[in-house]
Image (cartoon, rainbow, N blue to C red; front, side, top):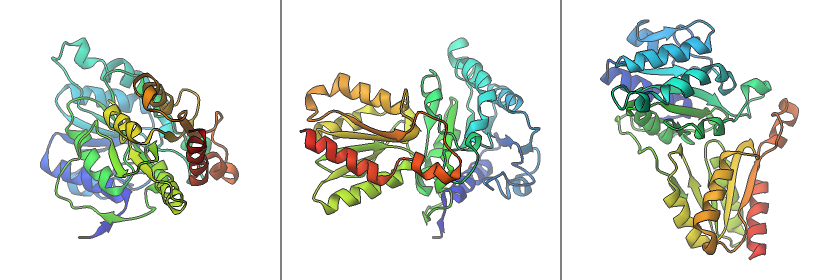
Length: 326
């Protein structure tokens, strides 16, 4: 079995689902002839034709609106926003129509659509190409927000997202698109949505994160282990609906929690998790919840970019503060 990167896992999942379900179509800017700006759709138009892999104009609003219409008519469109920072013009169609359609029609019409977007910083791109704004969508009822952190989870979660009867925002951490490889069977096996993945068991502190920051969380857990500190690492994977039970079970065991995310701190999704822990796990806590995040500013140009992104060292420091406080 060949080892593949996360971006290759995305392509593999799209190709599998298109081959097994004629209602699946892919659309977006440059997704066809060029295979996408990151080559996530490379080869798909040659294999499935221009009627199922559609190059669109430079018009995110129209892409989103066409996607809603296709899904409402019974297709399963997978639309690409070239970068997560380009998704703002799509939000009106996503928030006002895709997310509300099931409720608006009392279940008569659903929108089984997926919006894919390369997400986050770390590739030396301008700020509008490097944003991490997943929290803008977690407050919209009717949407699932999913973010893979490895090739295997990208493959399994994208299959699940395409098969889901409701709209899904699928954010792909581009910093780890080609960072490493792992074996991913092309067997069509989806991973469950709405479930956190416990990647490492621990007893002293829980590290809760998602997307590209899973890498830093695991590195921090390794560094803490060298000092005799046992860290549990949880990949949230589906931000909404949130599998809070898994997080609560971990906090009940460790008594301490560090929440790690790339987005700015204020009103980031980590704040929601911290609030839920305060509401439901207060008596299990041995120390205040720590948050390690991006800063409350726009991501800087590449000379300072890595100073903006949370590091494993900052996670280690936060874990040690939590241990010291108890």
